[in-house]
View 1: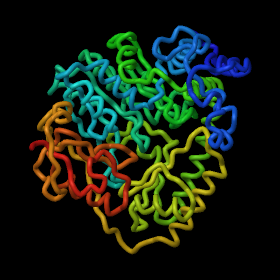
View 2 (view 1 turned 90 degrees about the horizontal axis):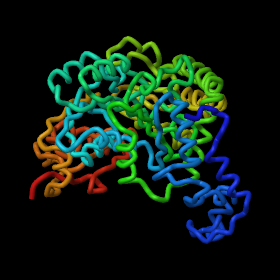
View 3 (view 1 turned 120 degrees about the vertical axis):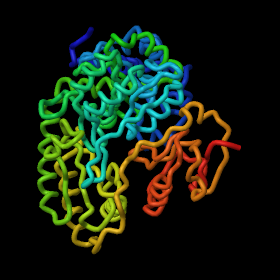
View 4 (view 1 turned 90 degrees about the vertical axis):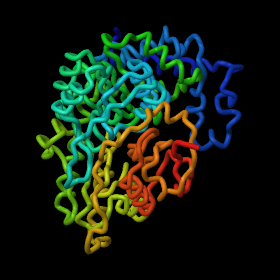
Length: 483
């Protein structure tokens, strides 16, 4: 395996191709930007010159034997895995491939109910049956934390025939479970461990940041380098430790769904981001930690705000914590996180990652600057003075494991009808509905719809949240099973 991380084999090959000024009679049809002049004039010539197609000198993602193979080997080396696969359809495609690589139709998989919608889609595609496990809930913050090893043992005891355990590392807000212990328990019972590390691309590159699950012995991990590792949006990587899953199985499943026209812009950005993390990661992340720690301290001096951090370690479901997730509880302002999210965007020109009932979240990563964090802190000080309300007008909604009536796959293919939102209670859901971000479903196909689900959907509508997944764009009706 290659391990010289100063090299960028794919990026170098693309630069060499561009410098040779090849006359293109292949696709893409814009021919190095000549056919897309308005776009080229805005973004620049170079980016379109290197938006090219697969060819011998640049390798092919579906069966890499050249520079893509070399770049993937370097990625695996950087993360300490046996193999890596570049993803050009985001981590969602990697999550689906993990589940499909381990589970056949009818197989059980133990999975937290606060998993991303891509995991639910993976259940539909694979035909696997979910065994939902409840994440720990921090009632003060109103958010889900990690999964305890004790609850994993209970789930395994009740489902010894499960094929795999699916874990989130870290949660959106930065909570990390006791992965080393959970992985040991799972492997003892012959179960693979699949890791959604969408928000952990920086894990393992600094001593004060949690370790990646793949280095702790996890079997597969889907990692969003574009989220916290610096690569372009939609570029991710799937990591594999051989044992429970074979490399060729994963390759075959990825090729079922991914494009045969993979973007070289996305793949080259993965190559360069890996180089940065492997050669400069400690230094870069040290600066990130300094920025976010200073900001967290300043925010905690603002009346009505609480920026939570490593003090949560030791609470149920928090074995470790990712400090680069700057979660800010705003409930004492008398505002919801949804409201603060909108105020920061509309009045202060600041785009947060998400808002929920009680909190807003800022992702602080390799591209942030001191000015960025100072702008946020200044805005929060002003907001706390100008936008306070006298009392809270909302209640927290705890996550509850739903009642599964029909498997996600069977529900997906079943006959369906639309019913009014208020008349859906007691029906079986025929679709996934979620606020985005974070993309955690309120309901998924095959689950019994309860009153709490409907009330939460109404609350999200009142908060003007972005809600996705439903057939009715106005969410006046819900698709349920039956005719």
